[in-house]
Figure (cartoon, rainbow, N blue to C red):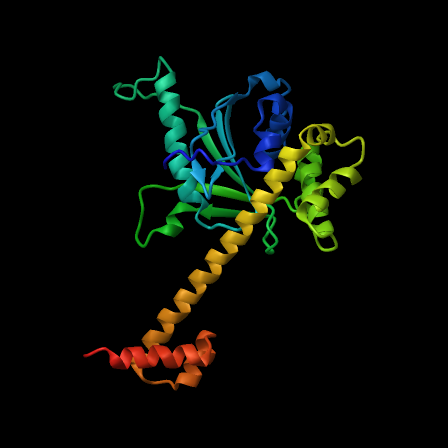
Length: 285
């Protein structure tokens, strides 16, 4: 993936992948893994800054103990996350090998490396289970020798309460996103909704002072991510329409259904199905 100089961070990364907030990164790691690390200085960030998707940089990866964690936040459900993680993992481990003097990939003895753990924190508006495992092998048509598993955790407010309670900054982030969405329903702009949500935060919220200090950046990130959600939704609609058109074409060529039935089955306007039929008939056999 080529570097993108116009890349933009997500609010999730701004909070949990920021060097000045490593204590929050550690809290999140402990909550996810049921561990009890106490020294945030033990965390070694390994995020590759020039890996970009939809102009958004990958969120955060870090090494602690013998575990290499890869964390991504998604506000749009994406079943292709394992493929993205596969690419990202390759880049991170390539740098790990390059920067580890005693690791020799050509050695005749087994070289040990940190265990990768892939987690996607989902807070989109589509209903999803509290936890879902996405597998790379679901991508392939045949049996594969390569597997990547991604644990998708629903962090929408009200989901995975035990996990959110175990990580106060994550719980506060979840509350904030939920509150912004609520205010969006009644306010004229997303910026106003962000302002109102931060203002409503209780004073004992750990992330409040950090958000207030960086309010302009926080609002820009929220607006960027909201625009990404709209773009992804448009892509989804476009893909669904393309699939419906392809299905209609097959049914027209099969000739067993009326155009009205095809339009109803494929959920397409009758005028579009009629136009497709004329195009097909106009093509010489």
